[in-house]
Image (cartoon, rainbow, N blue to C red; front, side, top):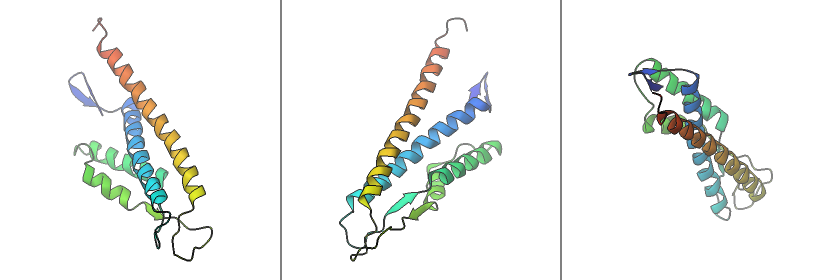
Length: 142
């Protein structure tokens, strides 16, 4: 949703904003989970977790579009937390450990690096949108 000409309007640009914003939030959540896995690599009994990113993004966008089309407004932080919590999965270990820890450091490092790059891509997309908004709002021909 964007505020255009004194009213809220939905459109393709608004969906891009929603997508980029939700992607950035979910990438940050996933990065925290991966960091937690790496930090607990030597903790006996620790079960590595991950976020199904595509399913979480799809659910967040579906919830947001359903609430904005029904007039309820933006998805709150509590709603978003509930929607992502159900998508957290335990990682299946490729090889079992005697201490019950399921963290595979090679896999975690690779996922962490990939997610960091994709986080930066999402951040750059939002920065580009902000620059466009600033340029449009500073246009002297309004």
